[in-house]
Length: 253
Image (cartoon, rainbow, N blue to C red; front, side, top):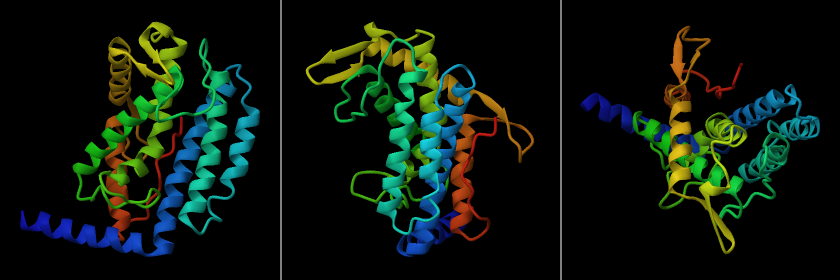
């Protein structure tokens, strides 16, 4: 127990040190955006080879990506990430059947696809937070998102990498296979939410995705998506303790 307490103390000192150092903080924040944008592109390229012309969105994101390593301020980096995600979401209308995404709306979401993104992102955030709690990392000290009261902002950072893999792929599946339809949404004045039956369907699809396994290139064994999130936290821990440089998870398949 004393050893665990010592490690936890060392970790929080390191986390704070990396946060307070502008070069160290921006370097980690860049890694999160690098990984997120790479995985978004992987999704678009996947559908681009399956009859959906996403070349415009792919080119736009590639141009924005060039600015990631050049950014010197976190708010500048967040602006680049926002542009990348906007281009990415523009591709949803080409990928999805039967539903239009329109503009991204959050509080509240104003159509079914926005409702799915918000609900799925919340689940991804919760999964990342659970993984962080299994390590010595403090979830309130983050690098891309600004730490704030009443939120575990490190989970938001790590979720950026996994939203394209865990949330968006599930959305494409449940919509295009018609597992979710109009009847699964409750539309009221200026807001749209999943109803209870819709939530059950999406939660099951999300949990199925977490349980899927891939052959890990480094570990040389099958690893579930759920475990990948935990491994990401360990990789970040090693970076913060100056053991090994952090490299964000990138889909290779």
